[in-house]
Image (tube, rainbow, N blue to C red; front, side, top):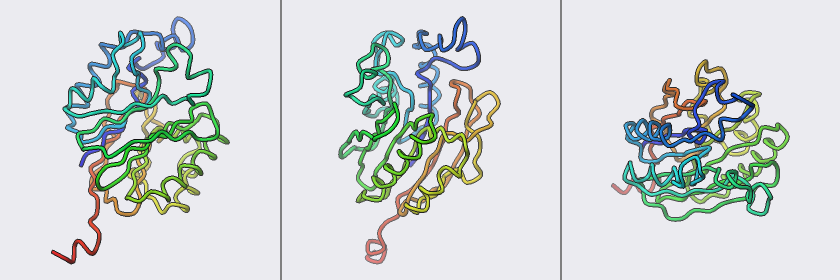
Length: 253
């Protein structure tokens, strides 16, 4: 199976022009054309599963169109979207911001999905999607180190409690490097699909491995790649993986 993880920055583009004529003015750009190019690229990767970070559920930037649904239609799958802000917060009720979140697009049949609200940070939503053989968690961790550490601890507990093999993917904002994940690895026994810490940000001159795909026992990673494409300020991550069959099942054949 192929998983593509991509922080697409809502399709608003890349480079310093994002901050012209004033800081973060790029968040107000129309995005339909840029997102069309992103979706064309992702569909060519022939993914079974896509994790979109910083996706737009249908603001004026997209002329009311949900990016997750549009990509699902293109690749022939279905989608789920979750606003990354706590539903009880003022931020989640603010125009434009309430349309910002993360999404899972899949050709695989979904058994169920949950939105977990973490305790710290502004971005608090952890999206959980369950499939036949495994569970995917999608996250966008906070910029603040303290809040990030708390969220990673809470996510670790969710991963440990899962009944199936787990993949955790997202934008980790781990500006201090992989050492931020050491406690998570110790608690969960997870591995990094990017063991060489190939940089994923910024896309123009990659220097930091902010985005990650982490996987637990029962998941076997077969191939990992970080394509050098500049549709966003982040680079995409492409993973081919399998779910190991239980020993009893292997012995019975």
